[in-house]
Amino acid sequence: MTRWFSRGVILAVGVLWMAACTGGIPSQAPPQPGATAETVGGMESPTASLEPTLTATSGVSAGPSLTPEVTADARPALTPEALSGTPSCSPPERAEEDALQGWPQLGHDPRRTSFYPAEVTWPWKVRWIWNGPADSGDGEPAPDHLSLPQGVQPVSGDGRLYVGHTDGRVRAISEETGQTVWTSESLGGAIVNAGAYSASTGCVYFGAQNGKFTLLDARTGELKRMVDLHGAIDMAPLLAGDSVFVGSQSGVMYALDSSTLAQRWAYDAGAALIASPAFSENHGGMVLVLAEDRTVHALSADTGKRLWRVTVNADVDPIRKTVFADTFPVVSDRNDVVIVRSYLNWEKIWQPDGGAPSTVEGIREFLTQNPEYQSLFVLNLADGTPRFVAPVMLGAIGNGGDLESTPPQVVLRPLADGTEVAILLWRNRQSCPPSYCDSRSDTTLGEMDLTTGVIRFVQDHKDQGNMRLPTDEQSPLAMAGDMIFYAHWQLLGALKVIDRSAGLGESYANPIITRELTPVLNTLAPGVCAGRSAHFCPGGMSSPGEGFAVDPGFYIYVSEKRIYDQYWTTPVRSVVISGGNIYWKSVDGAVIALTPAGP
Image (cartoon, rainbow, N blue to C red; front, side, top):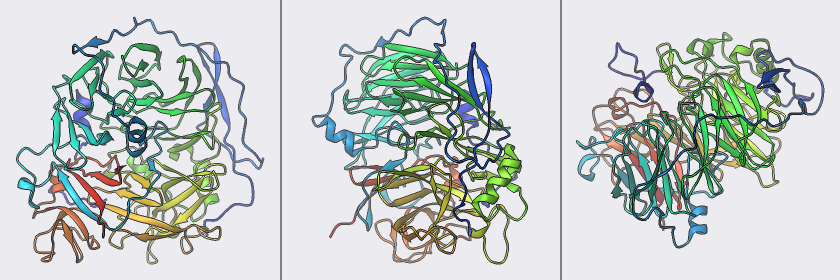
């Protein structure tokens, strides 16, 4: 990754919060990795093998039959504290409509799909910028600029966006005007992740690193109820039905009543909980939890009983000392699987020599023979066994020997025929330039079949002014209908899928067809675009000192300094879509709103 810092230092992003083909379709059935049994509290529970083997059998491995287990927790039940005379919130007048139009929690929904069903009419214009240039201009950040934590993603509801910050306060932003509607009292500790909004209660929920989990009135910001989880809260809460699920570094996951924060159950995972949980409606309702001892836990959403637990391959981040930082499981109920990404060390990007193999079969063979390189797992929801060896090799944000992030998660895209596919970044030698290939140059876009693991190529427009795709710069994705958003630190790239006919995608030269949409640049170099107006540049753009040329598009700042370096945080969250608008929290903390340009 070429990030042009004035350096001699490697930025240790995330330390702040931790301190408080022809690539084509194979003719045979997908390989099935083996599984070993792990004894857990007297129960046999399958453990994802670190040495999966290819087999020629057809179908999906059913896995062993499991008996749910209740995991006892000796801690007394949590006691919510009422913080106001009226401990209930004010639900919106049109709660059902509000729930459908917003982005109420991390990843949009309880399954963390990062998919919004409706496109945002293109072309766009800048509606407003919050926490951006001083005096509402297009210069450098204002003196009171907030460098929001990297894990924060705005959530929306009832016409407002909600963001937390390390000062412990929650801020509500008007979707209409971009003005701050209210700023809450401090929760007493840093907020380092997304919150959640409930249209049925009219409340927003945020956790802080002092262990306090707080319910606030979404209209006023008044703190209504608080409960102490007895451990730093680094995750985003999960809302599903009338329950909110949240855990902490104490290792305990709680199910709480979303109106009162009364405890429904507690589950001790046996290791710190940092990653945000996800929900599945299958198998009676499940909560998927990632623990820092490399384990994935499936719990009954109703009772907290453990249904299964498996261990996946992962390394401990040598600087931040985490395994699942700023990540979350992604659940495909239609395919009955959960997708997990795990941290791997920097040096694992660089094998094999000359970039990733050029076929799905070749990538699988390498990962099967070298299981320590596996970092994407597709697990059966029924029992946690791997469905196949996912042909996805390591890529993440990194620099100078340090990978700063867990690899970016997939986006789940439902199709008209009732199936669901995963849109993702993957590596394949076919995507390299004609003159050379190494592990930095082999990243592209793909569409994964979650039944077989086969990946089709998606036209990436790499290095053409919109999509910046080196392997050690892999950044988070989101979608709105057929629109794909790629939240790199320098710019927000955007594409639209226009043809995914059956004959497309078997090679990089014959991909699923996309077209470029308008990018958003964080910092525009002075003098580059004399005709700029309303944060739009009609000519080509570039950032100070960067060699990456950017297409005509929007920008946040004009400066001789790279604002994304001045206020650097690792990009681990993509855009949110709400009410027909696009909201991008750039790495410096500014939030830019794009809206249809109209007639």
